Length: 490
Ligand code: MLC
Ligand code: AMP
Image 1: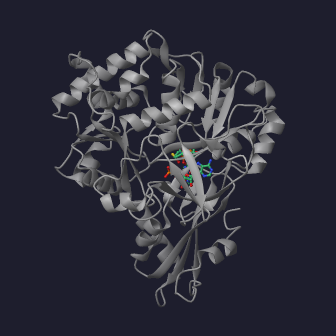
Image 2: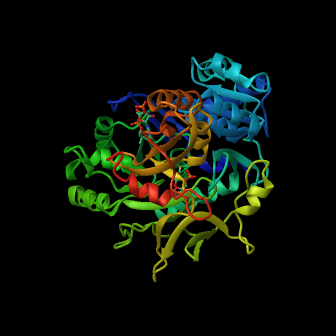
Image 3: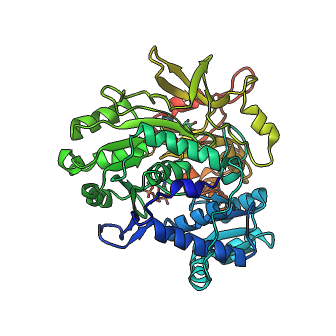
């Protein structure tokens, strides 16, 4: 089985990608056949570079049709693709390259020299533009999409799960297909659907959830380079589906033009990756007369639950029912799930993989929640201190390690507090070492973060204190800190 075969419709002449510059609705169209043909050129180009089945390819590239075609090329030839946030620094990318044992890194133009220098000789670094030029010149691969086991790795996405250093979550051809089919059914995807696609294509939300269920029906994707309110308002009259993180919806609601008429042609709005407040749900409904279908998922598992399109199926504050083939239970507040295709595990980390499973084989999500009498799930938070900022996960420990290594810092605590745009934002509380000067240390902290962490992880506020609050076990009381700094980013 090859996932790409399953994703391509019988009628390859249907349009797949609608391309247009930001702010415009007119541009090129790529049909399914053309996307497949382009992917076949990338298969041949990567083969020329010595990359083939089972190899890992890192992709840190701006969103584009070619970026997606490289992804499809990897699926087609059973290369395991590893998409990376474009905000990651070379130091972060080096970790992913080493951990995954990648043989090729495809990067943005201009990044190649620094990345090649940082990563060293273990992987070849090539820009997406050079790879595209090479693809223009090769004879495309003509054979069938490489067959193989349904449980072969298709992609690897780095996530820290509930704790610790980033781990590569291995996703299989079968698990991605099962999730796409379940979402297609629950969201009643139709061949005529057109999604206004504004999400980044390096996380499961933009890469899988907002693309694969549509492809299964031969539907269309208006591929937007990034999320921009004016641009979304221009695309809406030409779209039937919008999927976003809560920040997208709060930004749209901040614009008066986002109202009933603007939304008239859409049949489905979904939200996920971070909690949406009931207030945003209600404001959305008041303004547009419509409801947002909120769903819940994780990188390791794909989407797990969703509100439905039935009358009364959308309940603000809940994330809905388990998808077909999925089951959810709550044990002492902990949300555990059973999946149609089990999680394949973290790359080279059997111990960490084992920790995700209960003795009877359910996956521990690390989320805390409750089920109502109808089997609907409500999330109440997370067991860990993980911060979700604008839909990106931020792990306090990773930032504390960077801050603690700065000259003049005795220790630090990183927390998430309410942020008007991103839902949660990062705040650092720092204890100075001896008589260090806070202004000098702040500059050092900012430059240390700049050197090693993607910008969305940087603290948006620093405070300097004499000591961190600790309990009897000497553990830092982050709940106290979250309370104390509640308004720091208001
Ligand atoms: C950008 N910035 C952020 C940020 N995004 N800071 C905190 N949190 C974020 N999410 C910072 C930048 O570092 C920069 O800082 C400034 O904001 C402007 O950057 P930008 O790139 O212009 O921002 P913008 O384009 O406005 O991006 C905001 C956003 C983006 C909301 C559109 O973050 C986004 O696309 N989020 C979607 C995340 C997502 O796809 N999650 C899915 C995960 S999958 P400075 O300091 O330079 O000004 C998953 C599973 C599931 O969770 O269930 O789906
Ligand atoms: P990731 O590791 O990026 O896949 O993030 C997964 C986490 O995002 C989940 O464990 C949840 O904590 C959170 N999440 C996803 N969807 C929702 C949602 N609708 N509401 C609240 N949290 C969510």
